Amino acid sequence: MKYHFIAIGGSAMHNLAIALHKKGDIITGSDDEIFEPSKSRLAKYGILPEKTGWFPEKISVGIDAVVLGMHAKSDNPELQKAEELGLKIFSYPEFLFEKTKNKTRVVIGGSHGKTTTTAIIMHVLKTLGIKFDYMVGANIEGFETMVDFSDDTDIAVFEGDEYLTSPIDLRPKFHLYNPHIALITGIAWDHINVFPTFDNYVEQFKIFTDKIEYGGTLIYFESDKNLQTIAKQVRPDIETILYNTHKFIIENDTTYLLHNNSKTKIKIFGNHNLQNISGAKQVCLKLGITEGNFYKSISTFEGAAKRLQLLAKSSNIVVYQDFAHSPSKLKATIDAVKQQYPHKKIVACMELHTYSSLNKEFLQHYKGTMDSADTAIVFYSNHALELKKLEKLDKKSVAQSFGKQEIKVFDDKNELKKQLSFMDLSNSVLLLLSSGNFDGLKLTELAKELVENC
Image (cartoon, rainbow, N blue to C red; front, side, top):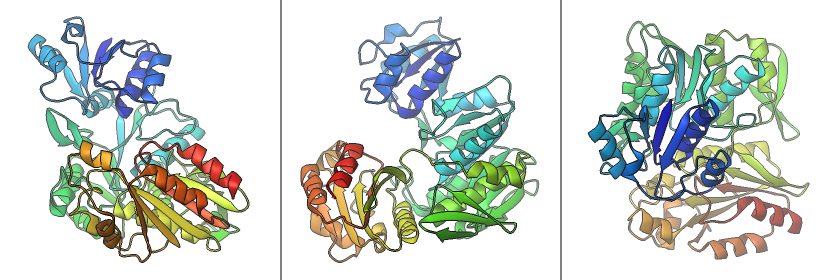
């Protein structure tokens, strides 16, 4: 098959392009900007566009289908040419559904924890030698790409993102997957540029449950009141299964799962991850995996990239990177580290990076989220504000939004780096929290420098 990718440089898009290329399909693509690591990975497989930009001449009747990325605009010249020629045009989620429409689809949704929960299920299946299709929103140890398909499996595991599908389809992505087994981790308002009210945001998850296949299953986090309401409204043919925080114990900075008079040592920690494990377990049981095999497999799971990812450590200091950027994710991650390392100082440094987090009206939702940190630092980039066409922020109002005394706020990455370099980080855990990269700071290098100098 011959596929053309419009906006091939996206994180999800370039992974799909590589996966199809490896299966022998012919791949072409375009984009007006391609950053690392997408650029190097596309080049490695010989499918990096020679020039950036949009080239309608690349679109011809010989193309079997066009895959349209969210980064493109609705007036994209390549898209217009494809429409004129009557070519099949798939959004990313439409393409995933098309490839798995005859398989058992497992879809993990929620405002937080969906990447890790999906990754746990993938890890367990792979450890047990069970083949499956998948799509996940982060790099996972043991998986070369973030998406892949196989002709000899009837299981597909997808992370269900609630963000928009494509520039010509404004439905949330997870509305297109029609799962047989759906899991929702929890609901906390996000993407305010798309879902202007919390009620509107919650409604997207209700619609998601309406899309569950006949006789399917909804698995959900018991303590979320919005999910309790949604679960009561599902069709009578849908089975509902609830879960909560897995029982555990912490010994010598290590977390153990407690089950059936046994305990299993795990490599991740925090209440939010113990909830992710519980949800993943319920999915695996539905797929026919035994409890014993689940616990044996979960013991070797090391987490997803940028989800409490260890960057550097010594006996004196530990440095983690985490994707946490929304209020609920930020609080859960800091609380988890505080619980895991009760005898160390917690230094939390977070970047306001998303449209929601940089919005003046939304900042109030961060109140109290960094209270568990011994030292709290907030960074934002004025360049990011300009790109998102948002009002300028002032450091004082940002600090007041968090409601924590002595919080430090920076808008210059060099000043932030200087602050971290001169801080007393002895007997500390440093958390670098962002869905971005602190305006281009090389976090791994920074972490190693801080550990060496501490």
